[in-house]
Image (cartoon, rainbow, N blue to C red; front, side, top):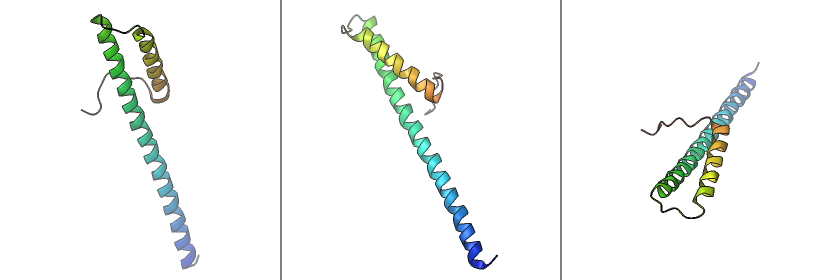
Length: 89
């Protein structure tokens, strides 16, 4: 195998490694964005529950809660169960 063949092979391996790293990085970004969205839904769910308990809820609050729960179920189906721990701590 000549020098140029070795260089081409190493370049090919490096390109494959870079592509793999980029795909993993993009997947992690997607997970972080989904986690932030789920955190927002959890906040809205908590606010809706609070408004119900303090008798300040709108007429649509119960249907809003059902929508929040469905959103969280979809999140769990894709990323796993919510466990109540805050990984940012």
